[in-house]
Length: 307
Image (cartoon, rainbow, N blue to C red):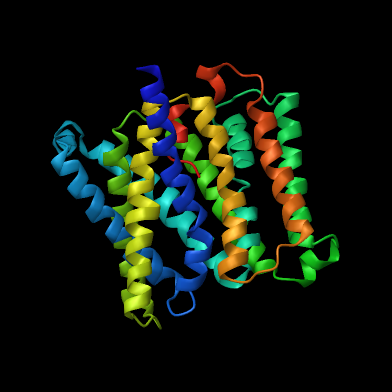
């Protein structure tokens, strides 16, 4: 039975790792013909529809009756922060920044979780957390500056700001969501619905230059179903069947896979600064979690929404 669960664990975690590894490249390709708000709107409504169908057939949709208006509002607010703000800033960053660099800068969210946990949850800022945060910050500086600090001010400062705002949004969302006990499938479904509604309202007000064609429509469906809905569901199942420590460490393969895909598909040159910066950031995450007991390593409720 143990080996059966171990096999399932690896099968389930492989799906989101591979799908999320394609996300930076996919978004870069979509943004060639679509604007960020349009990509966000369509991908989110597709994810919502898929999760609605999943929750309906699994019977989880009935749990909606157990939530009051205050619960729904909390899920909506958290969804706006974790899905609308995070994804919009990330898309805007990828739109004006090389995909590989945007993806790496986005990996500041674990450091943001440390900072917000200390501020909001009053968790102790330990020496290990300080080292982990500093390693992540140094990694970001290496990627953004390409070895020359002056390039940060003279280069694509807008892209850097967008990517870091995405990391801040996700870090804050993860911390605020840490104490929530709502069914995750329901909460994510509501989050995507809220995001889609706001995004479509923004499009109705400001308009869009996006032009749909068969290629980018397939990309949007893939984004909504595979990268959002299916990846999330498999991530949850992996956590249910497997060892949290193993799964969280396997998830760190995602940015390295993404780096390779960006190079192969987008023909982006992988610089040594990108590699060094990414290693620094991921090392910071590992330092943060090293030495903790399995049940303390990473809260499963946070893991179900991260990456």
